[in-house]
Image 1 (cartoon, helix red, strand yellow):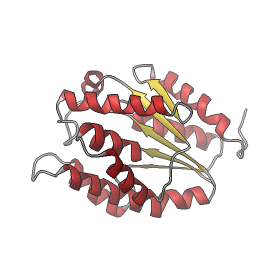
Image 2 (cartoon, rainbow, N blue to C red; image 1 turned 180 degrees about the horizontal axis):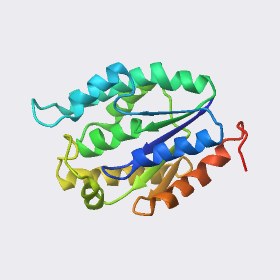
Image 3 (cartoon, rainbow, N blue to C red; image 1 turned 180 degrees about the vertical axis):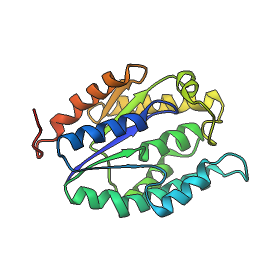
Image 4 (spheres, one colour; image 1 turned 90 degrees about the vertical axis):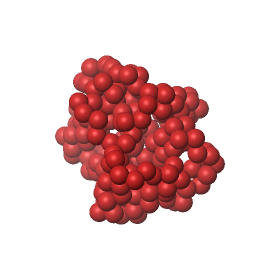
Length: 209
């Protein structure tokens, strides 16, 4: 099996940037790696992404939102993630199950037991080996956004504060699996912190010195 790493965090935390930098670092080491994202990453997932993220139009109930994300995730796990892991690759995913726990659980107020059940059904109980949380205050994160593009970015500040609180609670409960980084640090510093944590998890790969 390969190594499964996920990036988590609120809006504007820099997940996409850092996941791409980690992929580049792995490729420079000739380590086979795959970068994907949620929601999306497959043809079905990309269609569902449009439905759950676009602003305007008809409203989506929290329950429907949960199931749409789960459908996208189930397809991504079946079509991309499991296959890459079975091939011994490092899989990097920009968001995964913990996004659902915080956005639909802490944010929307859905039952955590129900969310876990849906997540487990979608993933077949697949869990990341490492979760990287880029932590930033909602005010700072949203200020980084040049334009408000989707339904989640348009939520009020209290919603985003609940999301951050949820992330920090989950990270504190499993410190061995979570790496929490101050996302206000310089980009290169964050990348080095991530690499220092990831590189010891690659004993099966030959790293360049």
